[in-house]
Length: 358
Image 1: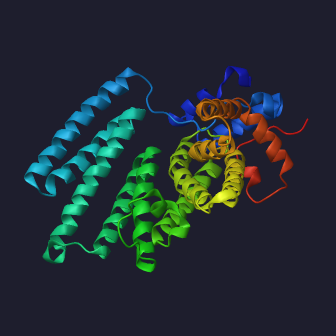
Image 2: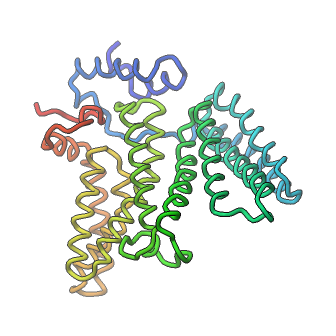
Image 3: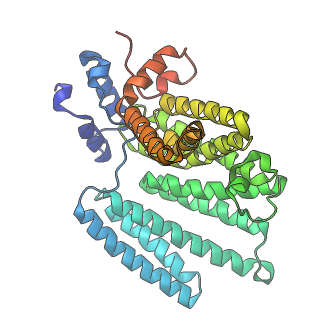
């Protein structure tokens, strides 16, 4: 069968239905690309993920949300660990049908969230009951985050829902923050964006944000390298890790550079954004570039600051819009040119394919 008759969406559907494994689908696609020419065979899209496949999924998800919300509200009134555990158990049982059998996207996401909320409530109530004087300390919070991470890992192992990676990433963030706080105390609760992201602020909080961003990036890259053709769940899982990594890394690096102040700060910001754009193109993930749009706006605004104030905002919006439109339009061409220009480096061949020089 020619590749024109079997689209990438068909291959993704076959992987999702269990007809093909991700490795078999990738090999099939590679054979087709070798015959037709790699660039001609590559589709223009990237970062595939699904929220829902039809109104039936929205309808079912609405029912599940109402049901679980009722249970959680009742649990708050009765104040006990039993009902949150019931919510987690029901979400697990429903996932056996809607996720494992029906393979429904949006209900699977809703059930993963419901399971996480039920597990969090159960863990929280349980640890509060064994805490001295009912006052959980720093160690108890760290233990709760670790238990939550373990519960979500079990859910992902059982159902392979990519969105569970996002929830597990949030639990992992809590683990990182509690561990860093042991070494570099955060001090008072952050009251500004600088306290959260500026490494020059002196708090351990930006350090924790940077470490978490790097961990999420590594997790996302590992998932991407399991599925470089982006046909199955590993690529979609990597998408959610990158959604977490991008704001943590971009805000920490860009805000620290910008807060240096003056001409030096703006130049450092420009260099940071150039490095972020290069990373986004190399790993083929637009989320990093999207996270830096606000800082790009700051940089363009600074460049336009000497002009007419009445024209600065319209010009800023037009330049930003033109930039994003251009990047979205020529993303694959820009990435192909960059990847051809870069020398060989570890993992380059395991990144998403790009057009070779003819």
